[in-house]
Image (cartoon, rainbow over all chains, first blue to last red):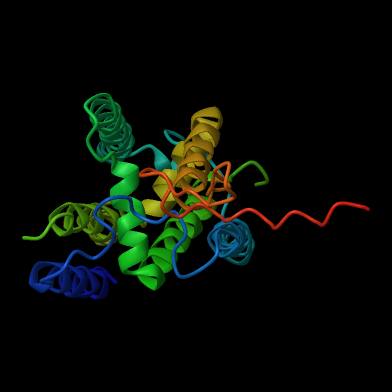
Length: 147
Length: 102
């Protein structure tokens, strides 16, 4: 999986590095890509639900007992520290990105949002698959209220 | 490199790179702690359900912000010409007005 994703990343970077023209409008990146916005929104919602359902099916099939971090098999101190550090690092990354977004907006430069729109304009399918992949992971990992 | 391709490389690197890191973390967790990273994060989400909900909500907000098209209606001049301001290149042209009832 990691290898396949790394290959996709290498192909995308190679295409961008070797491109001789801008991959999107350099004045104002389009808000609308190749696909209408409902495709992204419904795709993300659907992937989130599918992620949650497949997790529940996995839990039932394997007869796993849902436990909290720090209980039973989830009490390994090293793993607990690693998971908490991972979440903290993710939140720190989001904070940094939001600070950059605020700074760019304040200084009249392109905010990160514009570059994301530019990426969507340049590679709509990769963007759609990527955001659906993230949503699937979020649904599997974060929606744990029903077991 | 041509603007904005370098910055798009960073977006692609962060977007796909995070997934690559997760897949690598999965392999490490299976080898070291005998369970994939997802199950450990599930256990974390059960321990901190409100934080998990907030993270999912943050993700939803970001998706809406980035991908939900919010193109405004283009302004129209007094002469009826559709104006496209510098910041609204992809605005939607307004519908033609219906003929007045006479």
